[in-house]
Image (tube, rainbow, N blue to C red; front, side, top):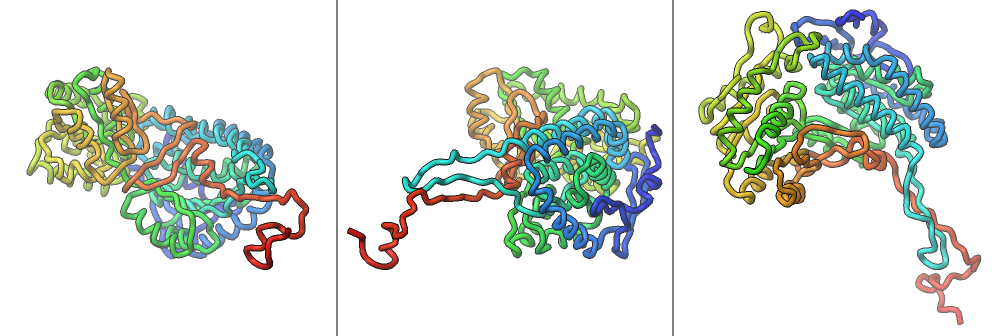
Length: 506
């Protein structure tokens, strides 16, 4: 297949997927999908408007009774077929993801696509494992048991940094639990979300179970979140936008799941394996060109290792190969857009006034100048309260700061509003155990940074939001718990009735 396959032909009918069919959006506006490696438009589509969101929610509502009424085994079988359909389309998905995002093809083929397929297989199994408290006679006169039931129509909004994986993380636990869903991908990157939904239909999931509306946050997103037919909202994106989502969802008393920004600390104690920590820092900071909410963004290194760590990271960053995302040797692709590249560059330029740019800190010239590229950047000497340390940059930028005592290192790690992910590096099990307990984050890696697996949850605390993606914990969030209680006595006049009327029976 041509690495830049004809997207226009593939989505000639439009970029909205409602009730099992592609269609045009009803908004006045259009949006261009741009290859960030070249700056060239690869697709243009009409955006979804409020009426498209209404139609998608109606399709999901219509599909809900049948899908919710299917047995767990039936849903599981359908989702296993879904995983197989995605496997057949793995190459297409990887190329589409690299085209719209600028991801190196080796990242798309070895991380994004297989991870999404594995997630689908995991939730196919999870569909058959709804858990609840054991039935029992907890009052003595009654038998109680727990039902886990689907919630209804889920309205989910996904970001542009991992469009395929985020579609999977939103859609899969929801439909495994028997819900139906309307997904709004970022308008910059709708392609793989649409392909994901098409694969679901081709695998035999009923029309309307998975719907996609491609539109702006202000028009399509806000309508979806505030829609009275939507029972739960799931959002991944910035903390600022997450606050707006929560405000809109609260007005209609929806359940909310928010996975928001991050500023992951990377804590290196003085007994750490220096080479391993340096390699981990470069990989953890540069994955997806740093456009990862769990990326290593601020490394705290105990003073005996600080200078050597800075030198090792600078040396490794110098070996990173920027280039065409479709070249299998490319390590670092462009940022998602020139606007995002300029935002990252702005953070770095402002930091020059109070910190040292050790390496990087510029956009490359030559053949890469037309793309949204930015060199891997290492910064030292920044104050803890500076913007480069406290704010989410979402680019290939790592800030390194020293610390003295273990107490100080952990305190600095916790000294931002965020709490999504972190890592601690040491050969001492007691040090790492303490770090895992005391660093406030939804995930703490020990002697590694970034790996995720379908069986374990992903989600944050504090300004990074609440709720979990992946794992059985995520699955449970898309169910509602119902207590059913049976009287076992067949007695007409219960003893407790006297608290409402009459006297105790003698």
